[in-house]
Length: 484
Image (cartoon, rainbow, N blue to C red; front, side, top):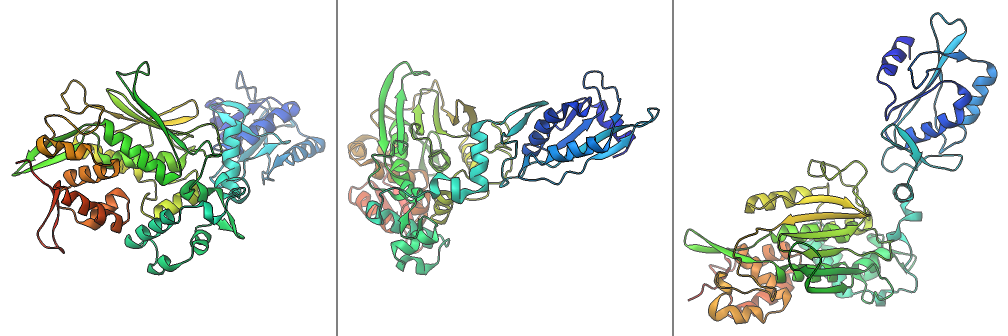
């Protein structure tokens, strides 16, 4: 660093990556800023410049000054290699500037502290790092020690896990080519061990969150559900709370959305196509993300779904990755899952995609259907995704479920049959209506269900004369039965 470079740097005034101190008499405050640089984007700490006037003064630098600086740097933890540079000030005999550069923080590093306290840069201000950010970085740096999903689930054994859910996840992974075919014959201990959800014969919290059968003592294993009349929370039409593992909550949440959102139809060529007013695949992706990336260590907070006349909100306790904001999350970005073990299982079983592609898929699904893109909000420790509903239109859907005079195949004589279906079968029926001509495997992939389960459910719908299979077994697909 030369004097001329210092002059150019100082012209910009103090900012997120520059801290100016008049002398090393402010050495301790300077180290707070150094720690903050290490925890954010890095920057320069310069002694010998008046912060207010930006006048370059320099100071006398003695052997004792250098020892004090070296001693102060040892207060940073983890230890850093930061070499002070001493630059002569022209026209001020014996006076020098002291410039020290600190690299920025990278994902997976330990959070830095100075004398046991972490600091952080908020714009040009140095502040104590929030507990939330500090704990998140500890979990990222030492997940085996701090991450909730990696902790032993006290008193939980294999008998407390749903074997059918585990086997179903494996089957889907094999069908999608994300797990080897031999995985289907593995023992539960072997499967969970390979997923790092079981260690030394003990079940981890992550396994419980994914596959637990009885979760009464885990209050965060819930999902709040509400349908409000109008655009605020003044009046409930329907409300409830689901509890259970990831798959239980995903099923309950999607059933609630199918119950309270409208199904519409349009004629394309000689066919009538049915679709949910907000793409089901976008809603499912949003709910999957909410359940996967929630902060499970917060025992008193749960995700929620709120349906209003003009929008649907899905939120979860948590925060966006540090490099993302509601304004930038739709751009291409890396994936930093809050619960990486849980996320890996969901990826292997095809419930989740990797590389941060979920947001773009939701956006694409909404664009393809001609509805507004989802919006992101961060508020009060929650991340919220908002889907806008069409307003001022007759949808034909009531709060009793699939109904109304404009719903094509769910209309008239067969309407009662649809209304009497279980929520799981309703979802399947609507998927067939929205994606006509798909085969069993393709439908199973859309729903995230085992192909054998979907095959049996399709048979049930065929027996009820709600759907039909056309063409050959190998090349054909399923279609809704048209109203006569």
